[in-house]
Image (cartoon, rainbow, N blue to C red; front, side, top):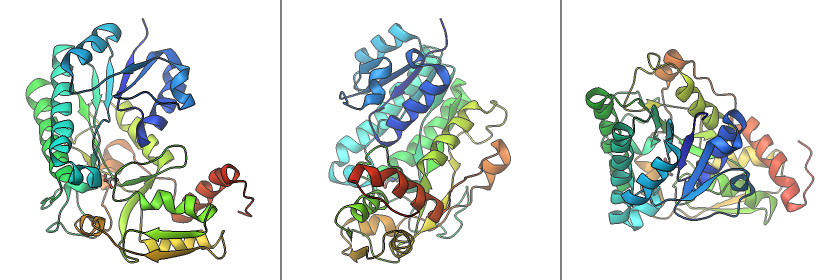
Length: 321
Ligand code: SER
């Protein structure tokens, strides 16, 4: 039997696209998509799909026995804003879900595990500009605390239990194929849809709130690159800093205005402003570059052009890009 790859939480923003990329590499039938809910997305019809609640150990064991995966991508989590609204569920899904996956990696001898961390591991005392890999980390959201604890568990399971677990601290992820859900960086996705529909964006962050961001093709490349690197190349077993670009709402608005004249943004910061204020402006990802050759391809304008080019037909718009 060829190598089987299980993606947990595959109906989310990243999972939807990652399943597609993995199926292009490994073949449709070798990539098992799974999520707590079914999805109508076409991508899931191309190969196996399992309904899986990662907190249900019996269900997880059944899926592992059925497919005997050699790689598991564990993406199921509540993001920052949702976890603040549902702190108990945020903590238990983000932590117990990871424990179940790490324990299964030992029990079922899973070759490689991927687990995403986030810029949310940083906090108010962290240096905000060019944030280094190792520095003060005092996250003050449930999401950030769960990701930082998760990073420590990953390194522990690598050191003490021999689990080959790999991880990236994603910045905000921006893409046109799938919808984000419950994140503080999500405005940078909806702003493109608004530009092509109402022509106006109501931003839940202030105009100068700079955050690190990454375009989805780069995020997919980084994820596959770290998973395809040799075990020796992956020197950091907590989670790697990863950067693409940094901008604030004013700058992304200006980038869109180059192609959609008349587009405007109004700023009405809400509870998410505090979360954004506790996160870095920009990230130093030199370890990822040195250890396994990370290099992003997209800057803000290249991303804006690609987002608008791909979204315009959906809304019946023609733009000169
Ligand atoms: N994009 C995530 C969020 O905003 C950060 O990892 O919650």
